[in-house]
Figure 1 (cartoon, rainbow, N blue to C red):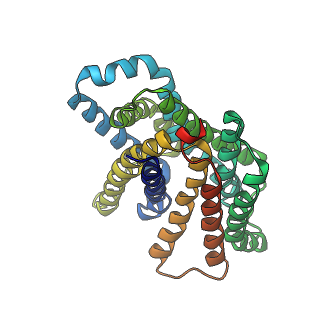
Figure 2 (figure 1 turned 60 degrees about the vertical axis):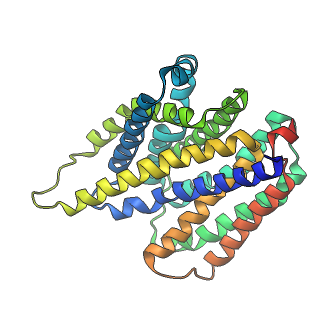
Figure 3 (figure 1 turned 90 degrees about the horizontal axis):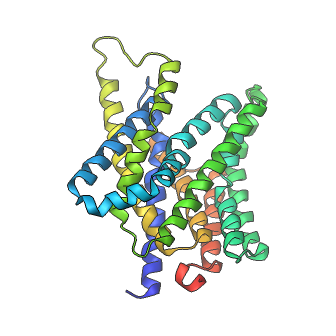
Amino acid sequence: MKEASLQIIAIASGLAAGALWALAFIAPALVSPFDGTKLTLLRYAVFGISSGVVLALLPRERWWPLAKAYWPSLLVLALAGNTLYYLLLSEALQLAGTLLPTMIIGTLPVVIPAIAGVQTGLFSARRLFWPGLLILSGLGLHISPVGEVAAKDGTIPQTSVGTVLALAALVSWAVYGLKNAALLASFQRADLVTWTALIGVATLGTLPLVVVFVLLDGSLMLDAGQWQPWLALIFWGLVLGLLSSWVATWLWNLASCVLTGEVLGYLIVSETVFAILYNFLVERRFPNTFELPSLVLLVSGVAIGIHTAPRSKLSAS
């Protein structure tokens, strides 16, 4: 297959991964009275168990050498991209409110291209300037009305702990994105199904962290007869575990095999864009005067970034 065709498939895969990840932003509101931590516990349990089933169906010689050689890295990826990242972010949101952590995490599409450029020796502040400016402006425009309302109501929590946790979450996912891409690039021939399943099993091994938070948060039990919330929890746990975790991880691994870290960073914006669009569908409304320009700025920043960045690892090497 031609390199240009591979790039198109890889970019489409990265965008699709973002669309599936974005489901996690609307799911917590649809599983009330359960909170996001309990949903995450079920999500990653589904991801891990289904990954174990996949490995059981594969020949042992296909996955055991990878598991034996890379199990420390797999645990790092499971923590940095899944359980630890979520726990840091959820605690940051609880302590510092939604505004500041969202802005901090929203800088991922700028931070990752910058770090990736430095690592590969291809960093260009000039090339990064306009995409970064458009993306950050889009994020600021989307969040600013929320901040104004919160400020008027006096509901903006000012806490340094929440800020530190949000920064830690940012670092956590950046480590995942860059380390995963580097590992896939080091393989002579990446087996994406096996690698995705190994990350899933490793994630299952990190679930005790989430279990501790669930136990500290209180009981999972509901009153007798309240079965509808359980159905919603199970449904969204399956959706997030199979689609937002399994399929999305496979798609992102596919993109990571072909595209440079700089382009991968820009593609992360698709998660934010789709999360906003899903929110419009849930609320059954059109974007307001702030949200529409915000989406235009985000998409424009990504388009310019992808157009100007070295796309393929083959052409960049």
